[in-house]
Image 1: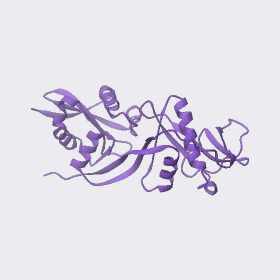
Image 2: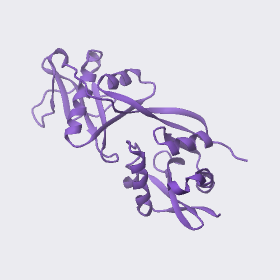
Image 3: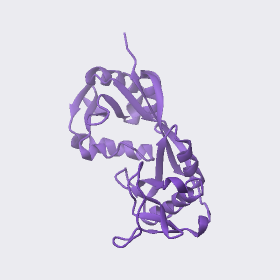
Image 4: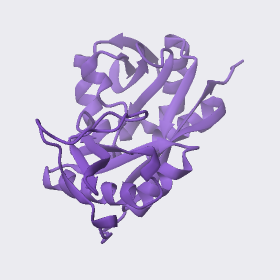
Length: 251
């Protein structure tokens, strides 16, 4: 058996990426790298036949393996293929979403000094949070709207929470992830936090996201306890982690 790993264009390997998408069946946070030119694509071959693919970051996370997929009938050779990928690509780091089992297995076997970089969220179920302080959830007006507070963490969203005549929170959802997933984001004005606006905003963003035909997802830094609690109260649940580590030295 001869194993080879060679560079290919993203366009050539995109059909395999679509198989990876379908098998993962979850939000893939690096999905847009394929169309934005942010990766190196590699073909995995056994006896001259393409049996899978991999991707490494280039513009962002250079040298990091960010995707790895092997057709099920060849998966018994996954570790050998991954080892050859590391040799051929000279990768220095590996990452995985723990809700993508094959990638998670490669991190466990081939990486060291692993750490959790982000928590990944999916919808848990229906919620029925009441609007705090008679707040109103609405779309931001294009002109003549109320002044918006200074944002420090997230961009201004197209949806807002208005309370007592002022905008106290904004949010939206990003759609450049693998369909049908969309990533929720929000920010509440600092002096208005811990009053229920954030979780109510997440609940309502979930609703408009679903109405737009998307599947709500989200993520937050592992150390951001306040953001995690807000997402959970708004109806999201941790479904995985983004973990990363350095490639082990191999003799």
